[in-house]
Image (tube, rainbow, N blue to C red; front, side, top):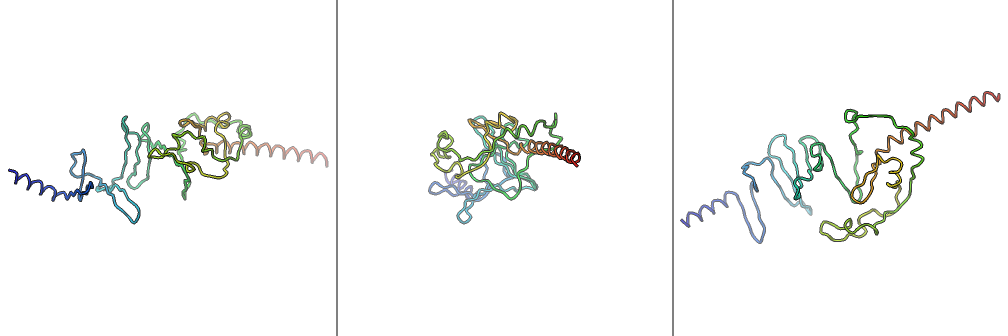
Length: 235
């Protein structure tokens, strides 16, 4: 009986090509954990490419995408999903189906294309023109500043291992921008509060700036007509 069990175990390990040594587990073939699916649609691949470690989800079926889910004790919280022949989405737990993205970059974010946001008329209601745009713009204050990392709470300075980061949270040097609290007094629609700090949806100010320029242009044109009338009377 013991010989039979040993033979079964040997055949099993040979069939799935599983090797373990020095605490490492190597699987040469398909691996499923907590699933009864014998042929998963995705394969997990971890490789080393030069000095980089690569983690890949490899679809094995036609027209399949890839998805990584993040859970905590309350369940699914966020998803990173690549749709087949489409795009890459990040979604938070309160709106998984509509690409509700919480994405934070502590450092320099760059790209070769502009950042788009939904603005389709079909997604909006109670549409009304802005009024008093020029007056609101005149109340806003552009400032020059440096980031204040010293007074940042320690929880915001910790890395993934709980260690305090110094001098690596905010970019150095002088910057230009607005103060969220001041903007909130004039255009509260573009200000939000994430945790302890206020933030501005800068792109949402575009509509206000467009209408302010148009108001200013109407004033210039009215003054130009008045000047021409006065000049005509003086001749």
